[in-house]
Image (cartoon, rainbow, N blue to C red; front, side):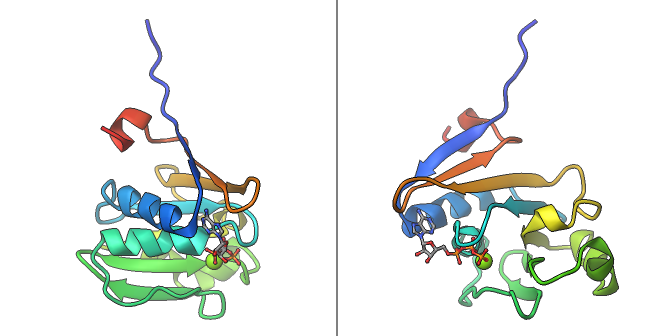
Length: 151
Ligand SMILES: Nc1ncnc2c1ncn2[C@@H]1O[C@H](COP(=O)(O)OP(=O)(O)OP(=O)(O)O)[C@@H](O)[C@H]1O
Ligand SMILES: [Mg+2]
């Protein structure tokens, strides 16, 4: 028996390429989807979210929700852009009504999702971004297969 290996792994060489990757991810999203972004400061999580927003047809400019924590945008589906950086953890998130977003009719994209371990649903699409040399970023999506991503 062959075991299917799911793993998208790609290198982005510029912010534009990261936006394009986000736009491609949007094609896999539906009401209730959660995209859990992981990666340190300045890796490109907000740029990737800009691409997801573009793919969802959001016309508004996406900005970093660090201080507001949750920003809502309207596209083909509602987009909830969440930044957990300033939250104390899952309890803070729940106090803000975070679960209502995750289980709402839109798509949730969460920066610093590693800080909300108990709130992220198991079926979330995890996207890990890490720094490589210069402007290069390694983007890994363990739950998607390369053949679906680049058919
Ligand atoms: N390949 C790349 N992809 C994305 N961003 C890149 C890339 N190369 C350089 N950059 C730069 O890295 C920065 C990424 O910023 P961004 O706000 O998206 O990061 P972030 O992961 O959201 O950071 P934070 O943890 O502060 O929220 C930008 O200044 C962007 O110009
Ligand atoms: Mg950010």
